[in-house]
Image (cartoon, rainbow, N blue to C red):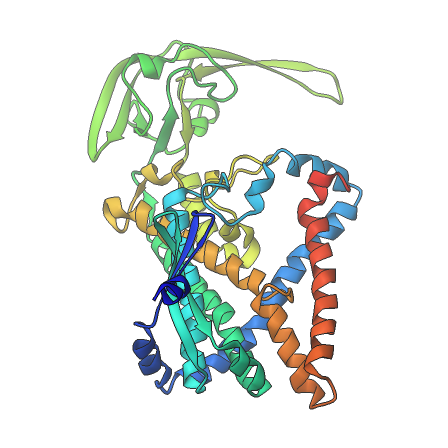
Length: 435
């Protein structure tokens, strides 16, 4: 009984615990008998080299960037970010929120492992057990133990389909979540046709930090300025600097939209800002005077453009989908200022799912983010990944008896070592000061 208990529960230093059971096997058998499983397994297998191509493209592109003339500057910028940011672990990675990160990992690992088991059962391979992985007492994933001997002894095309199932399902589910996220974001619209106030007290609006007439009259972040003296505007820079309708010291009435209501703030005296510009060619200076409201704002056009840019990023800037919305400023690029469902911006939109929009969109994003990264990493030909085992079985299958299991293992180990070196150089290189 004690020996059986040891097999059922495995603990690593009291931190990670694996709990095994056979209770989920009948369900896995029933799912494995579905007709769609075998053709879907072939499709998921074909996704594995695509996933590998994606991560190899990223790694090689990064390596070439480091070897370029600007490589040293890029390495310096990378070193400003903690190295644990490269780990897909919430709590250790400072950019992955703990709750959403755990949800993403649980979903990704669970579907990955169960996909292995379902395909194995569809092909008549034995599954010894299923189980749950706990971090202390928090469930962080699941696992499925396919009989390794049967997996190695079966035909290469069978073992390849089992191995490719995890990567394939992660990519399918991840991209499905991304599609739902884009659909949700596409339905977002600016809260009102005006300029959203982002700060009104001690904010260096337009490069100046002066007493704020707006703040003195109760205009606060989240308000939307829709008109000044009854003249509608949705861009304050246009209203105050380019229209010519207002002057410093002028007393105006400001129409704002706040929580679904339209209010008018009376008798606001516009401040005065002096701007001196110098033509670097002629060395001639010009002084201009502008009315000053004392707010930071985002125009209606910018809010609308953010939605359109994110929803269409696959056409010109797919990095917006890969970078978490919580990433800080790196250089001059702040993803949060472009991602509508980030904490920075979501309050400025009408939301398709109401107050649940933020939670739903962030859940979809992090499931996509974790699944996508798990898929491309697992497709690498490393000894610890499905991609490494798949390369081993592929070599045996292609060799048709001329390549033994031992020779295939040696070849895949060499390939895995070279890939490992590439990862170390690209990921750890900046911290090791290789560049």
